[in-house]
Image (cartoon, rainbow, N blue to C red):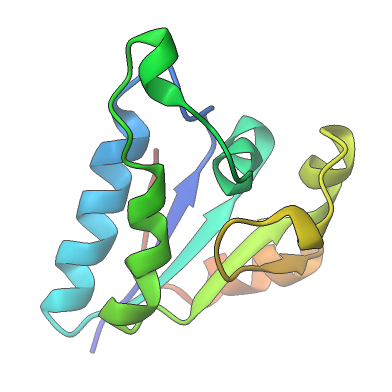
Length: 118
């Protein structure tokens, strides 16, 4: 089984790359790959509840992140430095994710067979 780490770096609006990354993660997991997900930089904004992306002309795919566990994607990490920079705490997350240090994220990346950044 291949270990794939999908890293999200961009905000939830303005680009389609995050939606593509989510599709890639779920598709990979459906083919029985071990998929982990990391949110860093502006991507930590995906975790906030109550967003209305349609107000800025984007489709609402954010609620789909709640389905990660249905695809057996159990490792979902949030860069604690990025979350701190945006003033986000773990009790504000809209779906199950764990805060992680830079060292923990680096270890996850090193253990992966493939790393894909969106």
